[in-house]
Length: 211
Image (cartoon, rainbow, N blue to C red; front, side):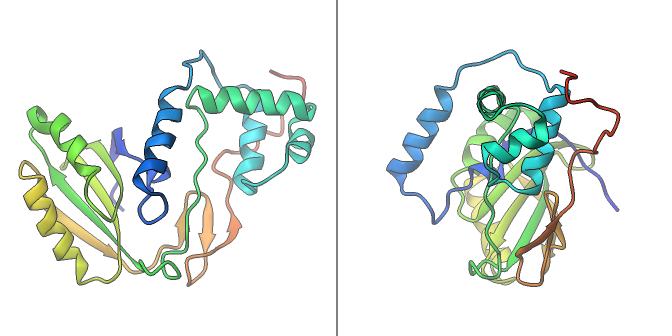
């Protein structure tokens, strides 16, 4: 097992819009995100219960969330709005890689001179197929995740990266033929969610009134 300590997310998969939204729709969504007000916020015991419930079912109604949180639906809606506005909660919808036609995932491990990091961060977002990129501390300082239609495209994408990101030196790469678990979801052979594994541990000692 190899672990990489992420220091900053350059591109999160929750912001991946390829093949889903046109340029105007992406612009409107980006404008909405920029207009969010900065709020001082921290996760309370109630917030943890809300997040654990959403981790099980991201489409859960406010009424059901209220049952898990021990609050009324209006209070739950208000808390969730605060958490989302403060950037403490992000909603994300993933598709089955195999059923979407992008059955192969590729991970590239590379190095960038610290003087070129800001420029590379902006250019990474322009490359097709790249879902996520993170700056990390370790033998490499950047990890890039991509979805491809076939393993043969792994070198095609790397060639494109060499043109768009000349400062990036790819030092290792891996092709993932099947993902077993993704963000707290166990996946079947088609890449569909079959059950959830909570990302937050359930603290049985926390009472409903502890905020």
